[in-house]
Figure 1 (cartoon, rainbow, N blue to C red):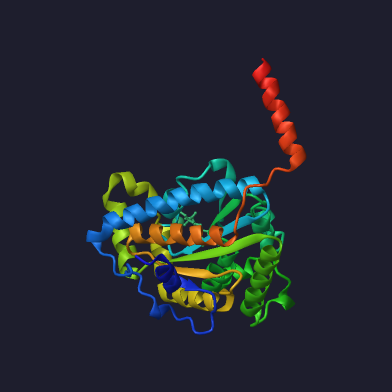
Figure 2 (figure 1 turned 120 degrees about the horizontal axis):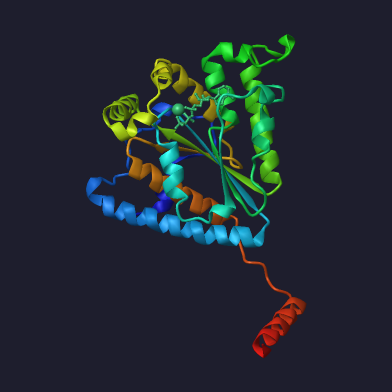
Length: 293
Ligand code: ATP
Ligand code: MG
């Protein structure tokens, strides 16, 4: 299978003509359940390749990678992060989940809490939800905006445009500092979300995952889809692209995400640090010292 072609299909790096309806949540790029073995192998390769590249990323200590996950409930953010990152050295990765902001967080601008967790050089930072919530849940529920402690005069009809602009600027700032940004929207269908909620209700081991609040949010489905579409249109850029990943089939979601991350890291042209002449000499001396023991 042509991975390049597959990734291209889901990558959105130019928002102007983006329409969510052009993207099918059940899409598997022509792979069906009979090709699952091939898919499994591709996922395994992706995971292995990620581990290899992360090792160089850390050794070189020059670039960083910020990976953002956004999705409706039950779209598989947690499972995707777990599977895709299963091979990487935990010391090189930090996963941060962003929930309803705390009192302290609300006393700052909304990028404050996220920027603290942006990855350092040599590291991969994963955001399970992110500052995009500020143009998603906050947009769908205007009362949340009211609770944000913003000076009245600053909240105008332009607020969403302003936020898109600030988000783009923040992402550009990161990339200009050597921290690459890649964003995933796990695109789930309403039907599949219902199936997964039912499964959580019917399977005792999955009960803990069920939250009545999720069903309430489901009631705002169309408003969320619109908010996602608009946010992606406004923030899909060459320097910080979105990937709209079909999420009705978990195995496929994981495959696409792992391959997209491999591609992102490969594009950095990472290299192990080159040891200088003086350093080589020091290594030689250390070696002789050990041999003499
Ligand atoms: P899971 O349910 O798998 O544990 P989750 O990301 O859904 O993961 P929850 O604790 O269920 O975690 O939900 C977090 C909630 O916090 C979401 O409903 C999200 O919309 C909300 N949230 C995140 N950021 C903000 C924000 N800036 N303003 C308001 N609400 C936010
Ligand atoms: Mg939840």
